[in-house]
Image (cartoon, rainbow, N blue to C red; front, side, top):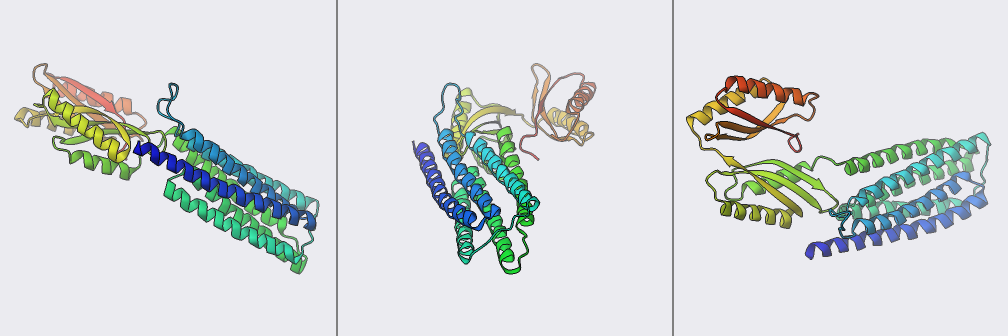
Amino acid sequence: MEEQDKLVKREKSIIKTSFVGIGGNVLLVVGKIIVGVFAHSISIITDAVNNLTDALSSVVTIIGTKISNKRPDKKHPYGHGRAEFITSAIIAMIIFVAGALAIYESITSLVNHEEPVYEIYSFIIIAIAIAVKVFLGLFFWFRAKKLNSDVLKASGIDALLDVALTAGTLVGAIVSYTTGVHLEGYIGIAIGLFILKTAVDVFRESASKIVGERTDKEFVENMTKDLLEIPGVYGVYDLIVNNYGIDRNIASVHVEVDDAMTAKEIQRLERGIAYMCYEKYHTIMTVGVYAKHDETEEARRIKSIIDDVVKEFPEVIQTHGFYIDEDTKTVNFDVIISIDSKNEREIYKQVHDRLHELLPEYHVHIVLDRDFTLS
């Protein structure tokens, strides 16, 4: 219940922030349209249209936030949290359209040799617009950091880019007013190209999160440290965290435990791990176990052979889960091969075949793991 209340408060904060953006941008649209029409300035009118797209971005933010906070359903049991990443991608597209429009209108004004006519009030309104955009950009940016919101971050970047666009418009207007040299078109093209680049960067970041990124290193290190501090846990391996939105994680992990533990003791340990991960890291955790082998001379001999073999392959970055089943004469362990390796299956086969040659009296069972958190 406490977690749900936190998400509801976050949703309300994002929506309130978005409404501030809508109000500010609507005022800017009205002011710039008035100045643009009277001054016959295509750059100011284009800038007004850009502000209109910013208001649209805030509307998209509200819709995306509402969707991302919908409760899980039968079709989406993991929830709808990733909708926020999709919203960021949509805002990136809106930014891209604004940049392309700025370039198009700037080129058109150069081709048509359009000459705007400015008055003092034009500069005052443009300067006020810059101040408003600086406020909105910083407001979105700080709220994005506080609420850990990618969609507000994208809106903040968009607003601060508008400051550059409007500032360029102001510079062009001043130069045109004082010298008669019209630079609006060239300034608009330069700023438009910069906006396009930023749109691509925002979209790439959002798309990467939709596809699924490696879990934050600090998050993994902190969780691993806490797991190792639990009595009865001797090792932590194969920690895989799947993110389905802010504070919505589903994960799995293998922990190494004493091979003499009873099912009751393992159950108690697993419940303690699951509870800690849920309370502290908002993560639903599934726990698997590796048995910790007693240190015998035979175990040390076999482990030494395994270590010598994997040293021949630089792509192998870790082995774990080593255990010898004396009853079935089976050697078990997992191997992690670097995710950068282009032939992990071939390396796995070579390690497997080599150990079969060196340990003919044993069955060697190797599980090929993926490098999810080590790099």
